[in-house]
Amino acid sequence: MTLVIDASVAAKWILPEAQSDKAVALRVQDPDLIAPSLIVAEIGNALWKSAGRGDFAKPDTRRMLEVATTHFSRLIPLQDLAGDALQLSIDLKHPIYDCFYLALAQRERAPLVSADKRLIAIGKRVKGIEIRAL
Image 1 (cartoon, rainbow, N blue to C red):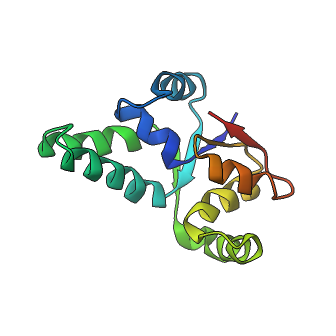
Image 2 (image 1 turned 90 degrees about the horizontal axis):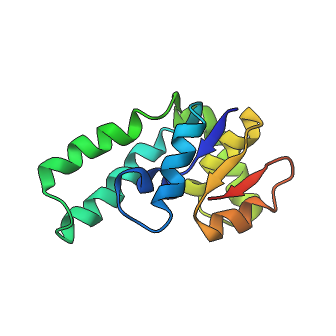
C-alpha cells in the first residue's frame, strides 16, 4: 500500500523523539512511502534545529538527511502539486506547505500519515483524503 508521509513522521526516523518507534515500524511495514519533495527541506530544518541544540555533530546531519530520504520510493516535485496545494491552502485558510502533502494524498488516493495534530485536523476537513495519526 502506498502511504504519503509528512515531515513530522520522517524526522522521527532519524531523531530520537516521542513515537520514533512507531515511525520506524511504519517505515519497515510499508515500503511504498511517498512525499512531496518539500520533505527534504523540512527534514533538513529539523536536523538544523537539532544540530543547533548540540544534539548531533554537524557533519552527522548531512548523512542523516541522506538516510532519511532514501526511505521514500518517490519524491514528487512541488511543481506537480502546486496548483492543487494552492487551491487547498486557499480553501482551508492554511499554509501551503502542509497542503502539498494533502494534495499528494488526494492525487494518489493514498492515506496521509502524520504526527502533526494541526495537519491531521485540517486534513479531516478535505473530502476524499484519509488521514492517519501516527
